[in-house]
Length: 475
Image 1 (cartoon, helix red, strand yellow):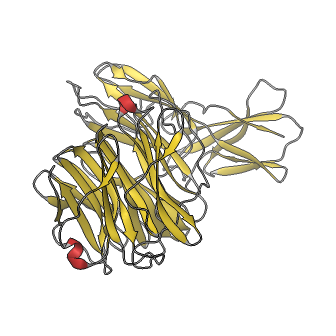
Image 2 (spheres, one colour):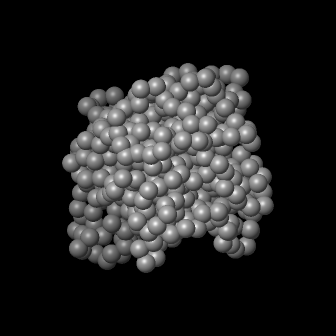
Image 3 (tube, rainbow, N blue to C red):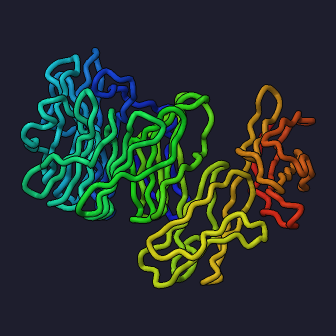
């Protein structure tokens, strides 16, 4: 998967419906694990230093799978663990000659009992790293993720058991040491870890209930951090950080609609849920997320993929004059650590749709675009603006065009306007005006290409967003 970006849009490979290898959580659980992780050795080595790890399954057996991209082809890499059952789940590098690989192996094809894997990359090959003595008190162990800060600083997370307890290991340059969090919840485990700095590390997972399990390391101790409750059960599988005030964690939750994707954002103060661009369907989950230096985020999983755009607001103004998003997606504005002034992101239309307030360096602000339209964001400190275009979703179904212009009902006082452009016409005509419904059906009167656009409006305030970019459907 080639990840590149220009700060506004990225070329992407559609990975929906790719599925994930179902390794099963330790202890016979039915949770699907991420079956492939891809990491690069750093921005300067992105072409020739990409490693992929996961597992291959054949004849009922699962064996660790490790591949390296040399700039031309993917090559098989000999890994220390190639027994009857093994799986790689976490991969992280602090540099070209320092990387860590985590997972678990087992002595036979039953996959039990499991023992954690910790392998090290020295720039030329992988070697097995000794585990801490009496790991998990002799219980089974599994390491799901790892974050390398430096050659003498790395964290690996997973679980011991059953019964499940969080597994937390630290590398000091000489050896791995097992540590713990204060009063971990029953039946809890870690699934992902991200290190912004040596004194700013986050670990996420599940505690067997509505609220995900989140812990933060400040350089001296781990502290529990609250999150939003989602459904009957919520789990965060992985986490990626842009800065200390801008992190993203993804996973899934169970609700009335079945298993649905879960996205949470940290703005430097609190974790809040974020709607993805594809919140519909059954059995969906997000299993990995990557934050690029350009501010573009990618997350993938089962039955969907998500793209979220970040834009910088620096002392010179917005980094991008125009961005594009999907209906239901969010944009996060990041305030770089190099800023010497405070900045804001506000809606100048008079509708009061969003207002970040003054934000210092190294923070972020997020706004979900749940209605199609073209939105303007303004930073009063630099008198610069950015526009965000959010098109409708329109598809042909059983001879009719299904057009969606919103994912949630409008706030009090707001309505939707929708226009259509018929085949052969250059003019937009009113189709829905002042409505609060989210979707409509159009029966085509002729063959050809139809266009659709929408906006959000508040009649009482005499304000509105701009019309959304047009979307076309051919009949």
